[in-house]
Length: 251
Image (cartoon, rainbow, N blue to C red; front, side):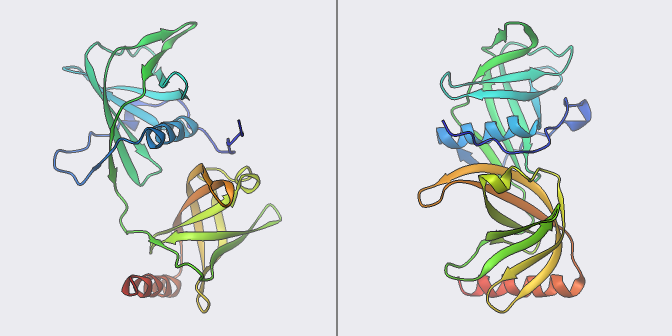
């Protein structure tokens, strides 16, 4: 099996202040039932150490994080916060993903304690999840055949990465696994040159919010890099907004 792990900073144990509210009834969330997507989403939560908020029936919420996901056993290991107990009955699990979305699923507390790890329990993978996209701006895919990419220098090394989507608030990049090993969630990239077509280039600072391995038929193993624009001049921002509007008008 190919190792698709990438360098990133995993968050420490969750705190009560990290709690995430449940998705409200009537919110524009969509159902996710594809087993691969669910496995991929929970694996991302395990890699980043994102806090999981658990709402048991008739009790206060408890905090945890995902330690690992096992595709063969179709289960995941939940690491509970010290002194927390997972009560019996159905519980709602909620987590933030990459700062841009919220994922929620429900499971019966049909769990088993992991031997030698008193605060870790094993639970079956959910059959479906709710996903609430919280992006302020819709992302637009880069037009095929255009010149869209990002260029920046990190530790003396020049990176030139293709840009597959963008908005007025962020961009999505694609990297090889080797390039992905040198990046991490939370990393700030200064003075990134963004090429948005054959006649438009802007410069901005980016903050990496998401790193996720994936496979394509033509390119094989790749890494998705989701970035938020953290610093940009007013002039550059106006040029970016015009570029977004231009692509929207063509669709």
